[in-house]
Image 1 (cartoon, rainbow, N blue to C red):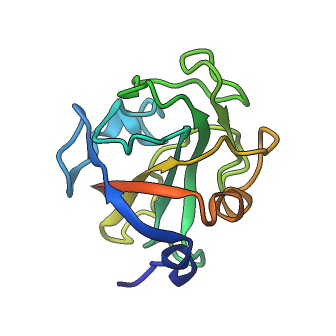
Image 2: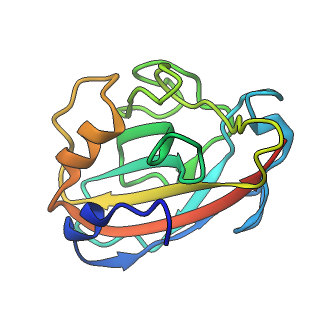
Length: 172
């Protein structure tokens, strides 16, 4: 599949499947404008189920594999969320340590901001897919707030117990 990084599959050892949903959009459905940079630029609420028993933390990386000139373009990096959570609320604030998710930290997206920045494809570039990827990890990540997605991927290597993906689409 275009935009899929091969190295990610090497770091996953037969991961459990995590169900990921959102009240904002269906899997492979349209992301409402309020969650885009042109709209309200607020993060959508996400829910998940079936975390593996030994989950120590949860990470989320949201990417656009269809962005021109990027492989892929990162919109959100969040990690060290507690496994007791069953989802993320709508409107998680930008910043290194979001108050809405005690213990969690956020990384830097490809816009250069720490936290969520919504879809912003070039006008007329067609439909872009936004992959909200949830990972159940067997440890907390020893990372400083504001790290890149690449640093998060490296820290997650060999620690993924489960993965789930919710895909939304958006175009201008």
